[in-house]
Length: 488
Ligand SMILES: Cc1cc2nc3c(=O)[nH]c(=O)nc-3n(C[C@H](O)[C@H](O)[C@H](O)COP(=O)(O)OP(=O)(O)OC[C@H]3O[C@@H](n4cnc5c(N)ncnc54)[C@H](O)[C@@H]3O)c2cc1C
Image (tube, rainbow, N blue to C red; front, side, top):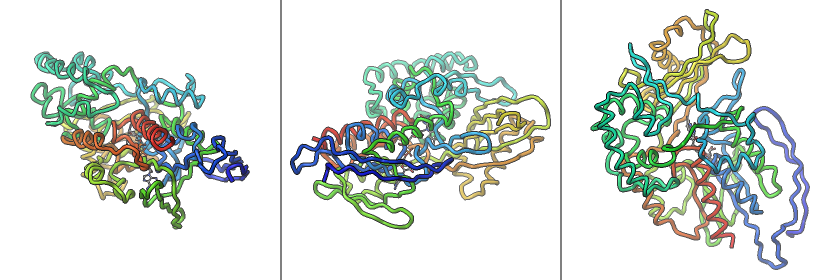
């Protein structure tokens, strides 16, 4: 049976074209002549950075891997779409340069080249808007950049520098892949802690930047999570990369294609998994495509969907798992695109971050830049605060755009005379996992109690932190678990 070679044609449609692949399923290289099959049959649910990372590792190890993705395209929160003149992002834009696991993937895919992966640091420079005062400039969210911020009063800089003993203690214990290494600080929100030291830092740096990165309000991130970030992944990070086309989505797009090209790999989009349960030495999975449900068994399943969706899919969670997954919450973080023309000649290139303390409740940041070659159009790109999304929940896209434009016109009055050509609202209702006070402790209990040898394995950014690199890394860990504990 395993020595059979099968050749078949498989059509699939991507956003921009119709494709046909000729796939040859090769004989099982691991077949040892006995009845024991050494190649594992694995399903991966979710084709985000985490699921694709797990699938690629397992496919490279020779296993039979099928990725099921409910959307029409891979990438999850890194997905892109073509709108008017360009590929635009639905979620993540860039990845942190120090994420070696993503650089390794880019090298394997042959896209780690200066024309294909470009420096995105400029787009990440923060210019925080204040009425009738100069902007607050910040290069990056690193302790050194924060203390060098010119606009911050000296008295507050001195008070803020008292955070260093806490950060140094954290640095000594920090595991950059495990936020629970800061669990002892999971007692108050980061805003509570820093308000006592520097209201300027909270109002003009922390709040607007956390809203920009994540849509987070003041109760959405604990001191534990922020201290872990500041002592680890972001403290020494030196900038951002993105693919020349599709932002960081270029990476997931190519990874999806690479997995599907492998003889033992398959990526099936438009397929929603509705139930997964562990049954002895196998896992039963039910999926729905075009309204038709189908069940199948696998040796292992990697569940790489957002954490709050896990209890809806996995029917055999133990008590510890249920407690943890019931506690995973997300903030919304919508993105709006407005294509405009100005009634004057010069090009506008502007980026501003909008703090709540200056009266901005809806928009966290916006950029205006030329759009399309010689079209005369500009693109207004804006990201919304989580609180702003909740405040406008249930409103039409047009009403959302109107509210956003009202805020931005306070900063860029020329928008009053701009003609709106087209608009698009990307709704991200479950955008970033909340790291509320108590979450890090909950995550620690879950990690400490995770049973070894289980056949349903989890991956996703909520298990480490909300970045493409960390999500992808969680997929590598899940694949490693399958290889070590099930593949032996
Ligand atoms: C607006 C925004 C901006 C961001 N900016 C950045 C940034 O610039 N840099 C950065 O590093 N990070 C950024 N992030 C965070 C980053 O996008 C995420 O941390 C990361 O992409 C999460 O990957 P994931 O694989 O864990 O989850 P996801 O990307 O959410 O993947 C989960 C996948 O599972 C699929 N799925 C869910 N349920 C099912 C089901 N039942 N059956 C089949 N498939 C299912 C989903 O459709 C999805 O494709 C941003 C996020 C947002 C929302």
